[in-house]
Length: 235
Image 1 (cartoon, one colour):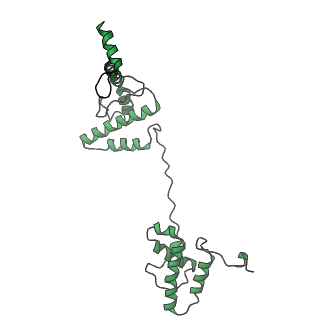
Image 2 (cartoon, rainbow, N blue to C red):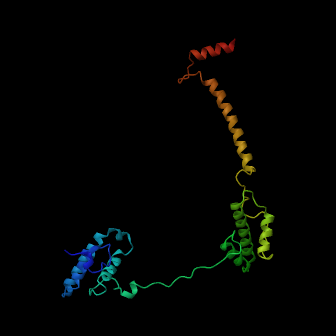
Image 3 (cartoon, rainbow, N blue to C red):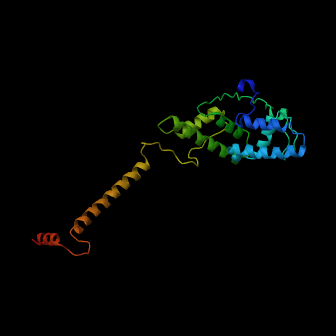
């Protein structure tokens, strides 16, 4: 009996032991045309055993790379794709440097510092003013994320002037609409109360019309209850 401990190393477990044995058999075929035909048939078999690779872009290219990898790059056949080498498949990319940036204003984030720096170096006055207003509105939004009450424009103007040493000035009443927190009242509550009162009028009207029409039948004719109702009204 043959045990796995006595077998050679299984290079790609997802293809199984039989595919690796077939590739090892390809290495023993001396006729190049026969070896090429068997390699093409083996590629089709590998694609059938791994249908999930069909969703991968250029999956046949991936199958050919796996074929050469399992053969330890010793298989001599023609490939429709560039034949890989041991160095290309096992090449490790260079290590990316970890960004070590510590923002001074952590409650605003690093991106706001980058926008402020870009606004300070902007030469066009219109773009610079647009940057300033956008920065001020973003500061108001960031403030509302951590506080329940709304922030005043003077506080934003003062803090922006402190950060930029007075080089950027946020003007009151920017393009962005004022933010009203939940439960803060304002026009929203007035409009909602108006809607409630209006709906109350509609409810009253509908109630009175219901009292007038509840004694009518579906065909528009009055029944016994409506006659009693009319007699009581005449008395």
